[in-house]
Amino acid sequence: MSGACDGLRVVDFSTWMAGPLASMVLADNGADVTKIEPPGGDPARAIPAFQTWNRGKKSIVLDLTSRNDRERALSLLADADVAVVSYRLGVAERLGVGYEDVRAINPRCVYVAISGYGEGGAKAGLAGYEALVSAKSGRMAGFERIADRDGPMYPAVPCASFAAAMFAVQGALAALHRRRETGAGQDAALDVEACKWRSVGRWAIPVDGDERSGREHVDVIGEASGVRASRRHDVHGTVVHRLLGGCIAFHRQCR
Image (cartoon, rainbow, N blue to C red; front, side, top):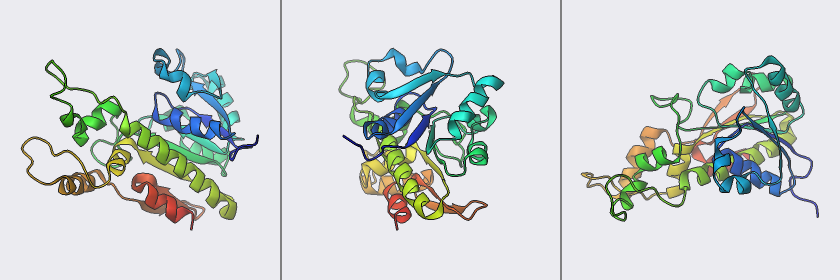
């Protein structure tokens, strides 16, 4: 039985949950996904969920600090429809697989970059993962009295990473749809923190000492986090959507 993504080639450099879950959805729908792992493998190999997040994919270990391995990665990207990365800001560029590096050899490629906190602001260069984003959003506050010990209580459901994965799929498919008209790929960047805010909608748990309503809490911190969709044009005039606005960007790209 054919899938909706039959014929698509995806090269996935991401680790842990958000990126691999996004490329898993594409693989489930027929895409040919190649997972690029660093020496030693994806750290998530240590947990059972790794087998689920990476089902239906081919895997290869490449050391991108090695010239030969970097050239091998670029040869895969030269034929890719979608690239997925989850590095901290600047790391992909240092390794030679940043957006401009990929566009230079394959201008049709859709480049999905998942970061912790986006490309601007004081936290841009920091590593961001589920526990940190959940703590900042106030999600952990609702669980702190459940455990019979002191310290943070981690939610069982990784909402931020799941939201980032789903918005990454939306962004990739929207950009591929747009490519039918323009012939060009796009830089579709998103961050886990902003996706977390979009996933909770207009509700959040107020932190201690904050008497504002949940709605006001999201408004204030959401604005501070830059939760909005914006546009910029690359040198080819292609509209590039920052998926900080999640569904907003998706609908605009499909017009």
